[in-house]
Image 1 (cartoon, protein in one colour):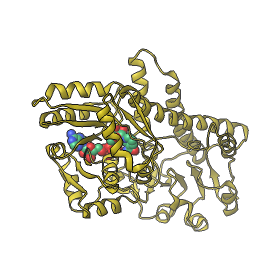
Image 2: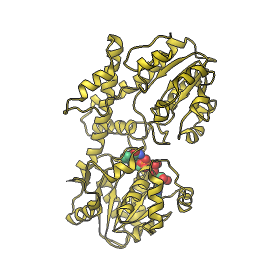
Image 3: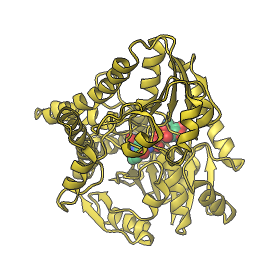
Image 4: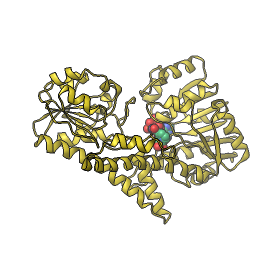
Amino acid sequence: MHLAIIGSGYVGLVTGACFADVGHNVICVDNDPRKVESLQAGKVPIYEPGLEEVIHRNVSAKRLRFTGSIKDGVENSEVIFIAVPTPQQPDGSVDLSFIEKVAREIAGVLTEYRVIVDKSTVPVKTGEKVAESIKRYNRHGAKFDVVSNPEFLREGCAVGDLMKPDRIVIGAQSEHAIDLMKKVYEPFMAPILVTDINSAELIKHAANSFLALKISYINAVSAICEASGADVEKVADGIGMDRRIGRNFLNAGIGYGGSCFPKDIAAFITISEQLGVPFHLLKEVQRINAGQKERFLKRIRDTLWVLREKKIAVWGLTFKPDTDDIRSSVAIDLVADMLREGAHVAVYDPKGSEKARAVRELASATFAASAMEAVEGAEALVIATEWSEFANVDLTAVKQAMHTAIVFDGRNLFDPATMRQVGFEYHSIGRERVASS
Ligand SMILES: NC(=O)c1ccc[n+]([C@@H]2O[C@H](COP(=O)([O-])OP(=O)(O)OC[C@H]3O[C@@H](n4cnc5c(N)ncnc54)[C@H](O)[C@@H]3O)[C@@H](O)[C@H]2O)c1
């Protein structure tokens, strides 16, 4: 099939590459000329494991190309996916101006029947607005259908998630559009759930909110574990072995971040309020999440006493491992907080440093070239992202390189018993505190 994806970011680019990999002809459109130029030159602007290979393979096979022109995409495709940003506004609601602009632009160049699919995460009832907008600006009176097809990929394993999805959600009204969408997804051999458009849109916000709720739940439990001397990992294992609950998303830490969870939970709260059925539970999810970082910072302050002039190493800047994405990363906030308090912070991240260098709040941080360089002479080490590179370091060498061997592990990357053996003072989330030997 001939497909276009408008917006070639974390979602659009991976989706386009994977669609091409199963045999479709794909045009990826973006309005950032530098991004398009770089992709046309064979350079992939984001880090996502395995993505570069899939892109190169499909560009060589002439199934994938890049353009800055929506007209090109619309004219040469049967199905057009929209994967542009839907950022959070200061009041928590979703900024739909990117979606609205793309809908208008598509309408302006629509000359024959097309299926227009919203893949971006949007509030319920956005499909209706997109259809209205296209109808209004549809100069040639071409027929079209609007479909909602939310995306559930996780950054860091997006290619795998795209190729082997748990489910495909198709929200549509027209049988013809449903048939075309089934044809698009047939090669993936995944379960397909067909719903109305509103339900499909709501599924995405409800799913992300539920996952965030699981994280906040275990984080709240972690505080009780610390107060009572229980071990949150054991508690999570015990809860997670129940198949009705499952162990995923029960890792205690310094809270969720990233470009999706914070904004999607805020959006769902706003949507529920606008609909007159406020979802109070989600406010508590947000409150617990913000509290985790504050509790962690308090522990750092309580231990180090004064942060001013302390040399603190931070491992991890991205919101999760295996990505270069630092959007709404708790790690970045943590570093900014410590810098504000006058600490000398040396940071290291395997893939996120380049993007982090552009963050104004981090201007006075030192960017180390390796995890070992960051800890040289440090009075404390903070682990903010659970990269496997950190789990595999030589802990004895780390201890020797540090000025005072104190570790604050915000992701429970290490085992307290190992840290005791090496001789660290070790603080983690919801587990026993290891005093220095
Ligand atoms: N990142 C994720 O893990 C993830 C997962 C599921 C859903 N989503 C949702 O998918 C959507 C896109 O997220 P993302 O992370 O890919 O964003 P992104 O910022 O990485 O990519 C969006 C791209 O759209 C382009 N763009 C903006 N306006 C455009 C226009 N008018 N015409 C053409 N291109 C335009 C931007 O230049 C950018 O390259 C959001 O709604 C997000 O909530 C994201």
